[in-house]
Amino acid sequence: MAAEDFGGKMLGRPIEIVFADHQKGHLAGSIATKWFDDQGVEAILDVAASATALAANQVAKQRGKFIE
Image (cartoon, rainbow, N blue to C red; front, side, top):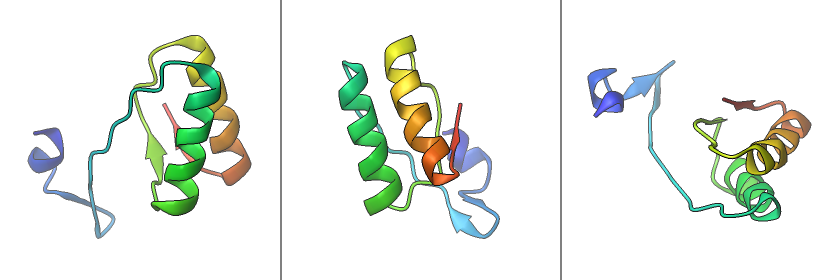
């Protein structure tokens, strides 16, 4: 609903919500890699646990992407 409230676009690009159950740190890193490299994801938001956030953040930094 937030993406729709925002107009469905940001900087002229469509907003698409994707999600995954990362469960463990190494899996979160793998998911982040796939999203950034293969699916064109520009930002990952709301990574809940410390180990998973650290793994996803490392991938994001390597690729110059945003993680919150």
